[in-house]
Image (cartoon, rainbow, N blue to C red; front, side, top):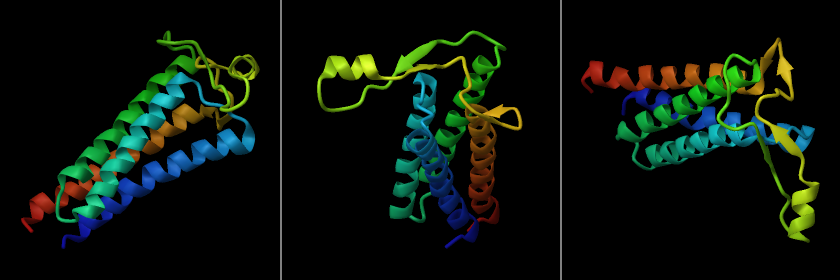
Length: 157
């Protein structure tokens, strides 16, 4: 078994799992509810997790690892676009969304749901929003997974 491919497979699973974990901690632990573009980034990470799990089911296959890397990169690109909307560099596709709680009176749940704007960063670290950090970490992880997975092809193993 190729050591580089095993590392790529592990990183392809760990990166989206950790980024999604951070997103859910920020949502449920700190009240930073996701906007619509935040959800788009999460959807790509969900796809990456599915491909990474498939890669563990088929350890010799490179395709699921590469697809996971692609999905991680897509999330990063969406994060970069979202960060640009937050910083006012360009106009977003959507400005606002809400997240209604499940159960109870549906109308009241919609009325009580927080309004979440896609063009306002609810939190930042060192001047970089959560979407910006997703851009940085996701693209770095995607490149690392691609490079690790490519080593198998060069080694001929």
